[in-house]
Image (tube, rainbow, N blue to C red; front, side):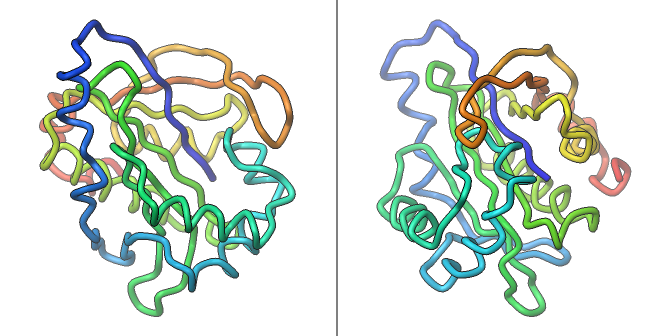
Length: 211
């Protein structure tokens, strides 16, 4: 299960683009009913490499290699700890036992300081249990409550029915179609682009009504 991000362009000065992009300096631990979203760390490497080494996931996530090795997982954790300006990367974990389930992230558009992109993936054993929707809700709520943004974008492969369902449950509206590169497939794949704006988010009385 996976959702990814689509970039757009808006005419803003370099200074304006940089100001709202300081996401990583304030990426708090997020709690939901069943989940804890926190920074990935070394103890996640084994579970990360095991779950991510799955063609059913890699072919739906544009920047994930396949096969996915322990070295790939260690490099991912290292890069995350080193920091990437404007990006919040979370490990999705179970609140009751700390089990690593997958990852999710928020990052700014390259040229649009008022828009963030959301992405996520879960290990296949954890599909169809509502975890992706729950994690996305936590990320989206944090973003709109703490960031000076107007909208959040998401995208998924046209064939990814489960991810589209998560995106729609979160209130995103279809915007259009396009093509993106797939590292695992070594070529371009068709995707659908969705957007959730602040006004729509504010109009949702509760996430429970969207489930």
